[in-house]
Image (tube, rainbow, N blue to C red; front, side, top):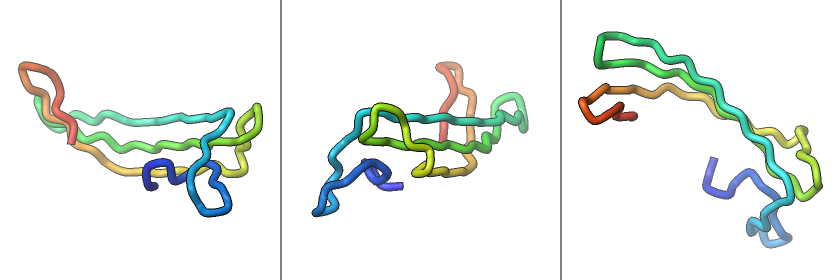
Length: 77
């Protein structure tokens, strides 16, 4: 989804922000070698102009990432 693409918009389609949001993420880290890993993930979220999130507008995205462990920490791709 585009930056500011899932929240409320005005009559011209411009983002107006919201009063509440909900977001969640799930990922599974799978080691391939000592330094390389694969990370499938699912992200979900919604933004609402109401005081409490409106889950009927929930957006979901999924993908796969790679991790390479360096001496300075993981490099995420």
